[in-house]
Amino acid sequence: MRICIINTGGTISSTGQPLAPMAADRFARAAQDLLGPALAAALPGDALHFDTGLRFSDDGPGTLDSTDLRPSDWCRIARRVLDLYADHDAFVILHGTDTMDYTGAALPLLLNVFDDLGLARAALSKPVILTGAQLPLFTDTPAGLVLNAGSDALANLTGALSCARLRLPEVAIFFDGRLLRGCRALKVSTTRFAAFDSPHLAPLAERGIGIRRGTVAPLPGPAAPDLALDAPAAHARAMAQLDAVQACIDDQRVVQITAVPADHRAAAPMLAQQVRAALDQGATGLLLEGFGPGNVPAGNGAIAQVLADADVPVLIASRVIGGQVGAFDYAAGAWIAATGAVAGGDMTPVAALAKMVVLTAAAPHHGWDRATLAALLARGLTGECAPTDRMDGPLWPGQVLTCGPVRLENDPDAGPRLMRGGAVLWQAPGPGVLRMQGERLALIGHDGAVLWSGPPAPGAVAILSDDPPALRMIDPAHRAAPVTALAG
Image (tube, rainbow, N blue to C red; front, top):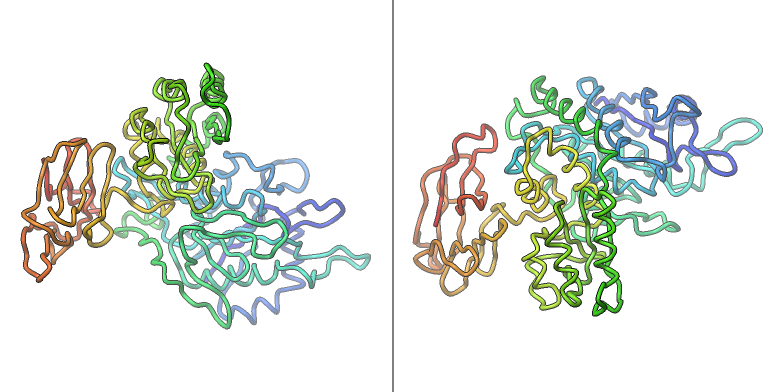
């Protein structure tokens, strides 16, 4: 297996007092001289390439402390992966811990290309694993660089390389023995070796005596060979998107504002003033961190008014590490949906910000209008949130799919029904489980009887749409004319 190691900087490759990242070529020589035999023994049959072609600046070492990374630097990392894609089977990216979770959330959106329904038209087909360390890998001595025996760096590097052999087609973070989905990870500690956690998703794999796959299914990868980044046309689509995004991504001004306890009954509540100031200063998107399940104080109506007046996307996340924003069921947040703000589901605020920045930069290239952009922000594209608009398994009684104002809810007593607002557009003949049976979507009663079935749609996925309100069966490989499974 051919594994490419790309060094962006960060603690793992830092030396000196104060610590600063060394140049990629110096780090590569040290790794080969001091670790070469050990890595070869640990990874028999693998060919490791320490790439030195990525530079963030022509001055100095060319690497960066991740504190200094800008959104356009995410694009530089993605471009290096795409430039080397055909020559390697997997990529391990050495990165600083300060913003590794932001890069882990941004790279999947830059290495995949999605259409207006969130289906991949160019898809990552190889592992891209970020790793780093809380302590440097090497230490400077009068005799030169030596291995830092007390560091977590070697275990993280070899663990990431070992996990690359699983060939999971997604961007992940390996740290302290666990492989986490990159867009689900959060930095949670500056003092423990367990620096990252994933509050809503179990690890993809764990390293102990060997590598053990987790209970979470990896992302599926390309729906067809011509959609994989290995294919020239798909690779060209990803490059064209990257060119367009990189040209304007640093101009995206997504402002993140956290709700805090305050007197929101004032004539001009502080939160409303902050939102208005951000809009007046040219914000291209707003990310609000609400309390609990996304609740934001309504105050005297000023906050609702300023959000409704915003002409940029507004995404609501939860400041709670394990928070999830849903249907705004509490009175303290029920007014939010009427403003047009998008519920962020179980996205972390880190993933939400990276997603807003990348998608708003990509929108002009793809011709996405405001409604399409809002729909994509709510959809799970790269596993950054649980999908709410498509069936990834049976729809059991009590479960709901949503797409804007359209809901497909499986009522335990009445059975599945398609609704828009309070209007019922389609009603199933009775209670049961909505699931695929062969090539058809079917409603299965408690005794196994088929109570209803839709038209045949081989190989399709069921996606809820708003315009028109319908559950549509769409072939993700060819994006053929969708089959309507049920409609109002």
